[in-house]
Image (tube, rainbow, N blue to C red; front, top):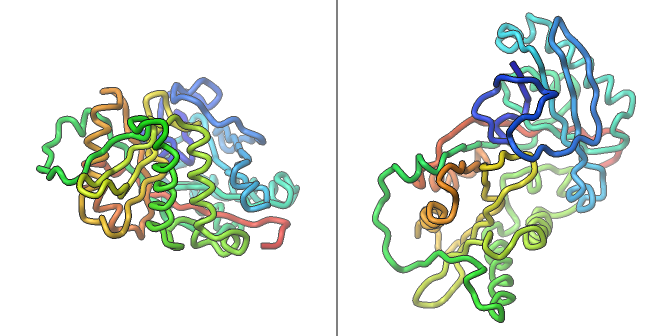
Length: 323
């Protein structure tokens, strides 16, 4: 059996699966590890990998590393009671060894974990701080096709940026950026808005703007679904839909979605989901993440048929660098 600590975030259906960490996962494009380390604890093969996030590292002017744990030949009691099995102590020793040796240099090191699983306590014991509570949804398209859908009025249309004439796309793109700025308004639940280490370097809206600019660089116009009010022609919401490294071949995610505050309650997200049923492959799966404090988004997910998978916690430590 094989276990990886960030399993919900990469769309795996559970913490354990058949196979080996060293074999191809069959889950699509894994993010290449920039650093790795291996050890063995009580018959369990332990592998650590860390990838440097070049986008965030550049934005925040500090190396940002994402750390994950992989275990081979997992013993059920090791996961059920990692303290009793000695796994927690061994993992804590590993993390502290990495920090002491300067494995990542002066850096912001983060890891997204499930609280009930082994790595969480080891990170706490090593000085990591919780900076974000996340709620992950994993929904097969077939599940959405088979569910009943509420009736929707015709006041809004969902289209894509690709459907606009070429000469209009620059204007629509500018409106998408404006919707994003209005929707977040300088506040948000993610660590980009709430972690004082990051906000001291760049405001949360800077992150949103930079992430949107990166989306426009990486994805074709068809990936940008846009909600348009029929009467006014106003762009009132959007969602960027696509694949990203680390997700399976048929795993899609909504990288960023937003609606103008004045249009909340108009089922924009539900309408976008209906559009996805027409455009995504029938055997695709949608992976969505929101924040535990974002109740309106959670309600929108529930109304649009998303299936809750797990809750995760983002943790970080700033090692060898001032904030």
